[in-house]
Image 1 (tube, rainbow, N blue to C red):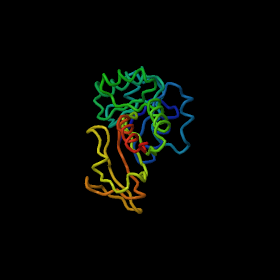
Image 2 (image 1 turned 135 degrees about the vertical axis):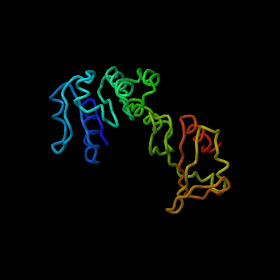
Image 3 (image 1 turned 90 degrees about the vertical axis):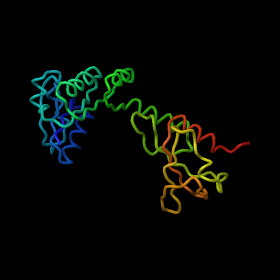
Image 4 (image 1 turned 120 degrees about the vertical axis):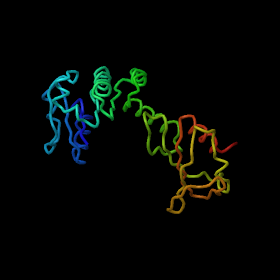
Length: 218
């Protein structure tokens, strides 16, 4: 795969190296030639110095035959414009962008751009860790709208059925149970046992509802 990355900061340089090590053809663009010093010594991608908003610079990076484009600068304005140019003018199939400032998120959504938002994701993860200490957050999807949790079944739920855990559609899903070291996808009639590790995909609302359901009622 041929990939173009814009921005040779910590994120861009690490992404470029990972893609390169996995056998992809990588070009990385930055207007500051000293930025490339952060690249690891064994990186063998194509380095392009210049303004990413210049079509000449993009063409030198090989955008006309690129399969994917990632805008990873710390400027949302540049990431937005560069991503739109890549997708709409050069018809790059896969375009992703870094959302640096959460106030720009709606603009990315308006232009239907795929984003990674470190600020939103980190804030969401910390919030869940603080508010839902019983639940172990394993992974976050998107910008933290849906999370994957592991929770050990509380003693007062032993003997109940999986059906008793089901939430409002769209809020949470019990994806699997790990019991005595073996994992399986349960049916609604599965009886919950002591020591079960439950794995849920849930929204913020869903995990709050589960937390309340697992609380010991006084």
